[in-house]
Length: 199
Ligand SMILES: NC(=O)c1ccc[n+]([C@@H]2O[C@H](COP(=O)([O-])OP(=O)(O)OC[C@H]3O[C@@H](n4cnc5c(N)ncnc54)[C@H](OP(=O)(O)O)[C@@H]3O)[C@@H](O)[C@H]2O)c1
Image (cartoon, rainbow, N blue to C red; front, side, top):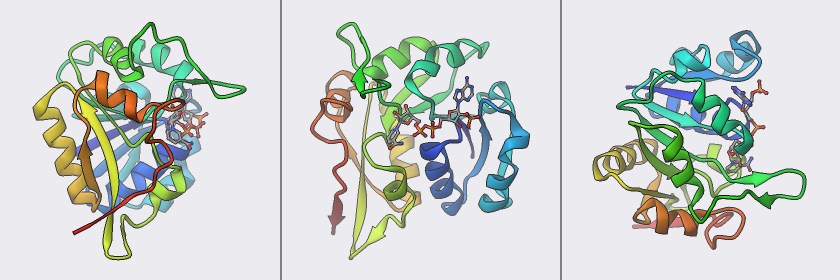
């Protein structure tokens, strides 16, 4: 399975590292274009490639690693999101000052879901720093916990399988409205918690 990663900054790279380690193919895109990603490709190895945002968004699973203010314009630039599984690691912060963006009473991933009609959205990978996310998920006899939430059971099951393959311990927080509040940064209780699940 190929995973499209839109946004190849700190979080996109950390996720790409885990994805290729787990045997997935990834295609990455950024704002500056594929040529700027040559050094990253060399690090990630043969399972990684680069493309435009449009090409990246054609993957079955799309990891949306963009600054919050870029999510609406970039998703709008993609002609169709029909049938995709979108993993949303974004945090609705406005800089400077890490202010919470205006969400109109919704969680940020509910907002993202409204921007990718026809796709299923699973919120995940937004609560850890890039360095922790890129580190070996198996540590001290445990597996690093990744929280996820979503409104579609099949999409969540697919993400759960990906997490397992990467070596993480997935914890399902329920629907985007409820789980998303727990995951929310700033404001929710779970961001920055680096937990290990011990069998
Ligand atoms: N950093 C963290 O600690 C952390 C933790 C959890 C979640 N998050 C969330 O994850 C998301 C990404 O954060 P980050 O720290 O990875 O940000 P980042 O390092 O600034 O990377 C952002 C990436 O998005 C790309 N981008 C920006 N505008 C774009 C556009 N119009 N079209 C295509 N690509 C575009 C940038 O491309 P260029 O490189 O070409 O500029 C860059 O590759 C944010 O929503 C953030 O809140 C961050």
